[in-house]
Length: 227
Image (cartoon, rainbow, N blue to C red; front, side):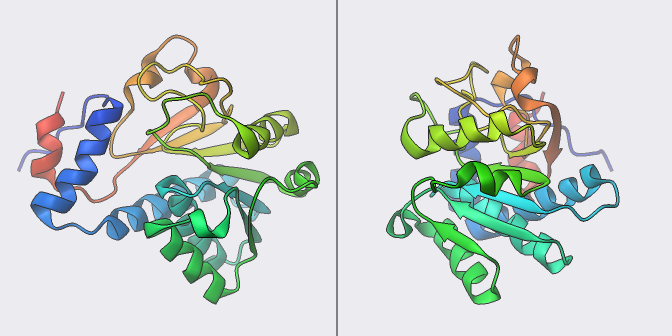
């Protein structure tokens, strides 16, 4: 039996089409994909921590990238790690699968807060050993503004190691250039396939070490995007 061929680097639109096709053609729930992504991210952070159990702060946006962060938090909490979340969004704007994850975490007693960037954001970040960036995903096409920009700048100036989910927040998935500002991660766990912009000159200064996480997409779907 031949091995599943790896995907070539994908554009923003191709990444979006993967999720749509998985749901429409294969009936694969997006919550399943999110679960696999977040669990893979948690496993990667365990590897990076090298046997220690660091304090982790996960910064989440209102969309699917934040939902991935929520799943990662649950798996780290299950391992006994000290983990907390900041949702950089008003509670009513957290919808869909991300809202499901936030509600599960609330019932699980994992510390989390939603709203604009808090006044003590720098202190919160300083109290963590690792940061997880779940603010913005591949869909970003305009410069980062407001609380999300404040959070990215605070993360970058903290000196704390950052694990980015799918891609560093603020990095254009196609060009590999920051949209005003972007997270400078020590490592990135990217889901299903490398993003087109990761190969651009200078992009590695934002992504750090990149690991592709299998999120359970059908092989017949991935083969459409094979090298």
